[in-house]
Length: 209
Image (tube, rainbow, N blue to C red; front, side):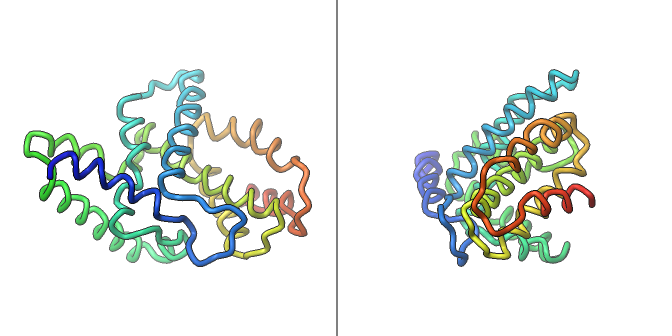
């Protein structure tokens, strides 16, 4: 019982695979995704600070490192399904948050519950930190999909994932987004590729939206 149960539950994130049911050259777990999101976020936050935007680093690390903890209870639901309607997205979020709250009330000592409720909450909001989390989360989708496309994976799911993540990132009003689009994304699409899919064209189409 207690915090030991929480620590043990973290192992489950290593057994949940992203984008289930599709052929992939490389599998990615939710645990690996969460780690990468933290790495993206801290660099994105550095870029924001370079442009004069204050960043609450404690909040940033809390929400990025724990943003997918709820998938321990519901698994990884594919992005196209999850976002097929606002109503469905809201219902999934309600179920996930409800199960996280139940877990905290059931297993976490009372004196720690306010901390866990705060740390394991949905962190994506209109704050700088919440927006950075949104960018970092979508950025990992971009990189996961890009790696599959670059290797010649013709699953339409990855084309859609790549395009929609780029569109979402483009419309988030942060300096780090401008930096990514101008300085990082070109390096990505100019890498050598044997893929039959025209990644550069898909990228240009996404950025035109």
